[in-house]
Image (cartoon, rainbow, N blue to C red; front, side):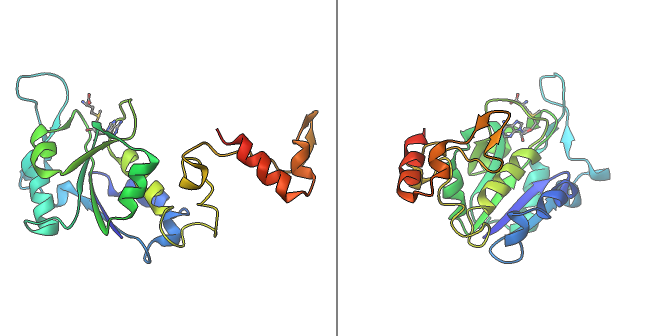
Length: 213
Ligand SMILES: C[S@@+](CC[C@H](N)C(=O)[O-])C[C@H]1O[C@@H](n2cnc3c(N)ncnc32)[C@H](O)[C@@H]1O
């Protein structure tokens, strides 16, 4: 799949692209393109935002700037969903992640400051997603959340099997994963459940199913 991110800080994505699972699928199952609104802005001196009509604090990302960025990348026809990242969007859940991972091409629009001119969300975007009921300073952290969560659903991103039995997976019927333990088996008297040390795979499997919440 291809994931295009429109942002003011393309360099901020460098760390994530060096980490697994994103690094594992980049150049193969995943193509990531980062577009800087400033590179295509029709305004002078790299301007991308402006004061809000009606007054008030903060600057607003301009609709003509985002339209120019999308047109420069796609002409008049974006190849897939164009998703505005905004606290007002539909909540990001694992089901939404699975839905996005099926798309051949996704575009994410990040904003900063006071946010988008509403016409961007209404007319240029086809979808809007929120990563939670709280306000972040920019849409780049949400874009990275989507990038990471979608990347781990792509073939080859994870060690075989490790993505199947995860929290929210169909395999666990949407539940939260059972607890994990490793050595030492006793630390300060905090012991590992006896069943996990038993070597009885049937009992271990049954215990794990029971612990899914
Ligand atoms: C400071 S926020 C703007 C908040 C906006 N004025 C409001 O009250 O809803 C700047 C940008 O960060 C991004 N952002 C912040 N919180 C977000 C969230 N929970 N989910 C998705 N994007 C978010 C959006 O792109 C937003 O336009």
